[in-house]
Image (cartoon, rainbow, N blue to C red; front, side, top):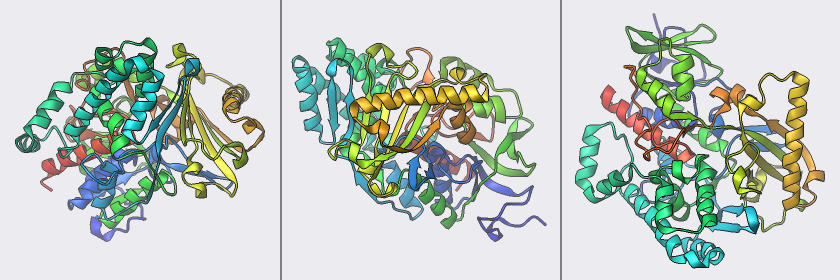
Length: 512
């Protein structure tokens, strides 16, 4: 007799042929939010994670006494008011809370021609600093960012759930018709069009490109205005807040809340294929041969991995059309460094972005992102040490076909170039390193299970805002997608939104 779900401890592997309400493939933030929301409503989801710990690109690893964030550490969604504080709400739904450290500056830009701008948490202070750099554009700068606030205020006044659920859409429209109409009007818009309406200075327009690129990996003309309204405003509203103990604590807390609420998570469980029967998704087969079934399947893998690799039937035409409009964003060359704290001035901002030439904005090894999370949480490193996480876009094509020795040589060569760039900002850092871990697109593909190590989709050409992004339901009955290749796109708070929406649609479909 197959054991019932309630009789099975969460740390035990399930016997083959076990059945669940929902199976979630992958424990990225989108998948975890989906599962925890379902568990909080009485559902019994199982999350299958290929690695040893949850989180995916929002996970962590430990080396030589350092606790490194796998991905970015510029975190939105931990505010205490409104409706856009999605990480706070996701944790609270399963009885969890995470202490965070507010960052007074979202990011310091170090850009071509000596352009240096700090994005202060205080909105007026940021506008004043940017206006000092472009005094002839002060009025346009305010009008541009104030318009982004209008978008944010619409989002922040409504409950953010599934636009695929008609009763929710009708209820929200009835409660706040002006906000809904305001959002609907801006769904087709991109940031580039808005920027050109208010701003003329070419270098300022390039700055707006960087403002978008730092979280969407595409310039303003390809960035939906809805997304920018959220990011450009929430950094001043809820703010950027670093989780105490590192970004990986978010996934750990969600996984604990999932188990406490009656859900399940099983590690070292790589899904080999999503099984269909008569065109409907009914289960999954693991690489070990174990087989589980569920009423619904949710893939937290990328849509390319989901439909081109995992699904055991031809990709639907709808997905083929989407893949013609969108292409995988690049992966990253990542350096996780442990350095002597003495080489980092105490007034340094936690997050920095560096670019030497505007033409290299989207080029491999062009834009350099830097996080120093130990400025916020010294406990992540040994005493008197700092963590430097530096990363720059890198494409898989540059790493394929190399012999092991050539791969290692190329990796070290590019890492040394990044260290030299850091040494210009922080003299002496090159000689102060006591730990160096180097990750490439191959590393990201191996540990995160993402095609070519990609960090999400980007439009192949200028598109009409968010109208091209798919929602959670797919053309395959019983199969849903969640994460950065579903509406509303990339970013930790965005994939949390995707998780709320996916769980809401599933709850309606399963009558939870």
